[in-house]
Length: 82
Image (cartoon, rainbow, N blue to C red; front, side, top):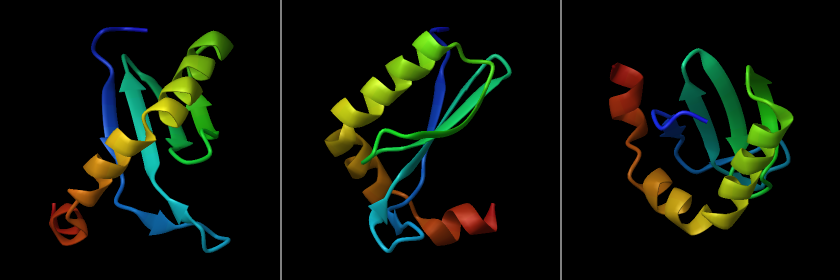
């Protein structure tokens, strides 16, 4: 993976089953992946190898507390108005 990986974190929301969810997007040189922090599931991806996706899953599962802290700082109204 490139050292220039961009990660975007959603606010804490509820998934379709009513469980807490935080969605994380990874972007790098035209590649894209979106995953969910609590489950580690990669929902969509384009351009990442299976090995790289496994690394992203590992990151999501092992950094949940840090991701949660980032999600608490998301201001949905500010993001909506951009």
